[in-house]
Length: 156
Image (spheres, rainbow, N blue to C red):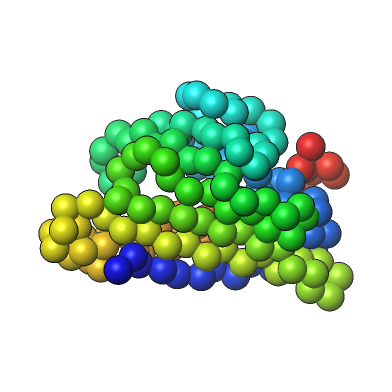
């Protein structure tokens, strides 16, 4: 059974702008400087769209990882979903939703994942990965919201 969590982030940006900023490869790289994440194959800059993929290389928990994700579903500007097609997880799906909320947007990230290695992987999920992944998404979203405030046209 995969681990799942939901992260909610409010922004003053309109949904369409936050939707574009969230699928902007360059913004993602900027949000992941601590892990030295970079796009090394597929769509490596600008906006990623449905059916496209990106291969990331990063350092997490002291280990270098490569992961390829594909945008498997997109309903602009309300949502998109990316899924790991190759990488360290047995399974990883991240759904991004953008809901109008007063004068801005409520961004809702739903993340589901499972580690490999059976019972050992489930133990690592509970002890380390669940909290690590949730903090990673929260930090990414804080970066995006701050980026949105600093840039007049952040998604393009």
